Length: 416
Ligand SMILES: [Fe+2]
Ligand SMILES: [Fe+2]
Ligand SMILES: [Fe+2]
Image (cartoon, rainbow, N blue to C red; front, side, top):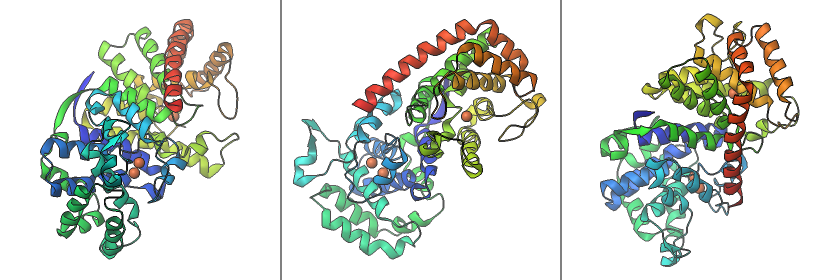
């Protein structure tokens, strides 16, 4: 399935959601991308190289799967750099991001008077140096204070580490860019990152045709790999929904869409701390509200890409119920698309078949009995549950095989 979208929009939609996980991180990727664009331009990078630096900056910390890891990276002198390797491996999975994956891989390599131009025998791209500097400036900024009041302390911290930590060429770029008026005030403005990118006319900002299936698979891994309990969840939902949609006679195009919706249904969970996802007991009232917000975030992120309207509808309504008691929009049965009902049943089928922090996996007989009960009390669509019980062997096998592959993949990443 192919859609037209700009690579920067795709990158930003992932990381802006991940940055919602803590108020301390809000806008981190956007700020870093903005800074990278200003520094790179002042350095005189060509359009291709500048585009790569900005795109890599917009995604640089996607490999920091846990909140703890993310918060560690906010320390200017952080030693927590392990996230660079999984970030590289995840981004490589999606062909249009493959060329920026090495930039992300080396975004914490220090310059060390020139020794850092190579890392373990491989040349470090200059774009990595740009992202590194932009990222460190972003973490030095106190978001609660006016940027213009921090220019002196930030500049002196950077200059102090020039050559030791930062490629002097990038530092010169920063000094030059910081003298221009919009540099600091641009950081204060709401939605600051958008306008300079458009003005740079970068290739990464122009719509291109991309393969949505492989993009959504990569996103599913970013979402799922944060916790061993959910390591293969979205993959399982996509595989189950795929079989169910075929059995229900949906068109080839709709089957494609439903696989994407399955991969992306929990995208909004990037905004939920993994401590809640892994909590070994029931969530309290406030925690439940945070957890439930993920369906809203899924819709918000996907809704921003106009060609994804149907996928956004199906994915974000996977917790709606036929009787209207679900969330986030409290839709009733007559307003719930078949696609959303199929994703809902696939989600429950997959979730109950998996171990959770608060209970072990249930056997297939019990899973089907639970779903039939949910159909009876009008939580889920009875017709979809019936289709599932008719082909449960097939759905089960497809889900198991897909999830096995995803778990192996996560083990490789985590142990790398
Ligand atoms: Fe980082
Ligand atoms: Fe960062
Ligand atoms: Fe969900």
